[in-house]
Amino acid sequence: MNFVTFDASYVNKLRAGDAPTEQHFVTYFSELILLKLRPRLRNQEQIEDVKQETFSRTFSLIRSEGGLRHAERLGPLVNSICNNVLMEQYRSSNRVEALEDEAAERLVETRPNALNKVISDDTRKVVRHVLDGLNERDRSLLQAVFLEERDKDEVCTELGVDRDYLRVLLHRAKGSFRTIYSKRVGAKAPLIAI
Amino acid sequence: MNHQEALQEMAVERYLLRELSGASLDSFEEHLFECPECTADVKAGAIFIDAARTELNAPRRITAPIPKRAPAWISWFTSPWTLGPAFAACLLALCFQTFVQQPRMRQEIAQMQAPSVLKPLVLANAGARGDSIPEIVAPEHGSFVISLDVPSTGGFSSYLCSLHAPDGSLLWQTTVTPEQARDALLINVPTGKTKEGLNTFLVQGLPISDTSNGRLVDLASYRFHLKVQGN
Image 1 (tube, chains in turn green, orange):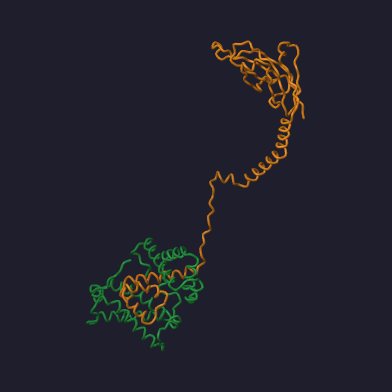
Image 2: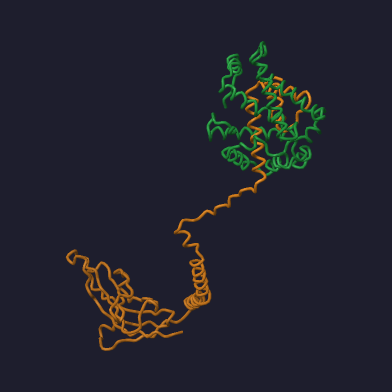
């Protein structure tokens, strides 16, 4: 996995309108914003609106005089702007409410999303391989939580495990997925094709 | 939240499971947007979950177990076409042994173990006279006794007594020492080892001297009629 470093050089390229850097920036943060907004907004259009507005404001700020003094704070800046745009989105739709657990559950976006659509066949094969390696209980646990979206406490009680077990199971499955994926298609290949 | 805290609290997993809320959610998201490692982990986790939803929803592909096949030459033995007749043959053999062979053997053993008076066929002088051929009636599943003299002329290290069938084939043979040859020999002959008809008993001597080159010398030949009587 290649990790990107947001430094002064990177920010300067963004300021100068360097196309490859802009493309990288949009790709990298699009996925994060998508993951952030998915549990909070009802539909794909709203998510897209907030994302576009976030990028627009971020670019404006970066290119303004004294907009971003510390390059390493680029990520938190994007997050902060996204939070503001999200709050405005809530206000505009008269839905300014605290995002408590219940509300968050209610607002979950369950339709196929952009991330889901671009998952490659290779990725699916690896996931299938990981799932096939699980025992029946672990598979049932993931199915109940992610597919049937049942109450996690209820499912854990039913299968005789606790919430920590579920976290560890996800941690291991995710780790296996990353390891196998890296071996199969190489570390440099993106997990999703964007 | 820093990266170490995120690892300790399994914040990535909590985030993916949507267990974070309020301040902990804000804190982790702020860290997430500046931490490439957590970003990569969250993205991988999200992709895994999305793909797993699809896979878990699909009918599970179960590969049918492939039965271990024996090599061709072994499978020939395990084929019903071979096993059926083989079992039938075994059963037949078992029945034959149980109902035919074993009773017969028991009867023969009983006969052999039962005390009986043996009337020996005396061949001692048959050769000398040469005018008459003695006859003996022997039980089919028993034996008979032959009494004969070995012409002990001396000069032989041992004697060979051979019984020949009417067609000249050798039926039975035994070696006799000079000490045994001093007196008349009594030889118990199982009827099963003989053939009905004119049998010949040949007595040969093995000379002591080396000049014979191990060649046997015919000493006597006794002929007798054998008649087998059924039980």
